Image (cartoon, rainbow, N blue to C red; front, side, top):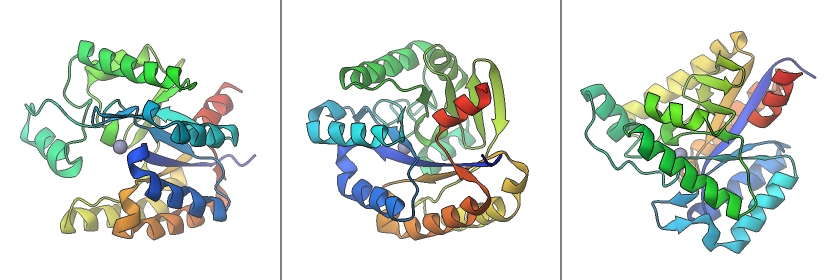
Length: 247
Ligand SMILES: [Zn+2]
C-alpha cells in the first residue's frame, strides 16, 4: 500500500441530480476511480426524501457493494437560520455556501434532531453511515458535539476529524465553486496551490465533486486534478482510512 491517500468525494447525492450524478460516476469509472465517498442528502430541501425513489436506493446499494462509501450529508441541505453572529459568517453562509449551511448556525437540540431524522431515513433504506459531512462543511460547535455521539468522523474544509480515539488531521480539499467571477478565480488559484505544494506535506489529499460541476465545466478540471494526484497516492474512501488508522 502507498502511504499517501486520495479521497474523491461526490457531494449532494440526491435523486434531484440524477442525470449529473450518472455522468460523474460513469466518467470516474472510465478512469478507474472505483472507490469514492458518496455524500447523500437524506431529504433534499425537506421534500425530496431518498425513500421516494426505489431505483435510486438500488443504485446506491450497487455502488456501496462495489466498495464505495455512503456518507450522511446533512438532512435537507438548506439553512433555516439567517441570523449570523458576524458579517464574516454571513458572507460565508450566503455568498460562498449560497444558503446551504444547514449546520452553521443551529442549537445542539436542532442539530441532534436533524442528524437523527437523516439517520432514520438511511436506516429505513438499509444504510448505516459511519461518517457525516455537513453541507458546505459548515459545522458550529453545538452541531459538532451532537454528531460526535453518532458518527466516527467528520470533515471540514481543511481537516478530517476522527472521533474515537480523537484525532484532527490536516487535509485540504480541491473544490470548484460557482460562486461568481472573483470567488471562482480565488478557488482556482487555491486548488493549484494545493496540488503543486500543500499536498506534498499531507497524508490525505481530497477532491470534492458537485453535480453543478457538470454544467459549469469544472468537472474536467476536477478529473485533471485527480489524474495528477493519483500518480503517487492510493485512492481510498474515508471509511477505508478508518481501517488504515486502526491497523
Ligand atoms: Zn453539499
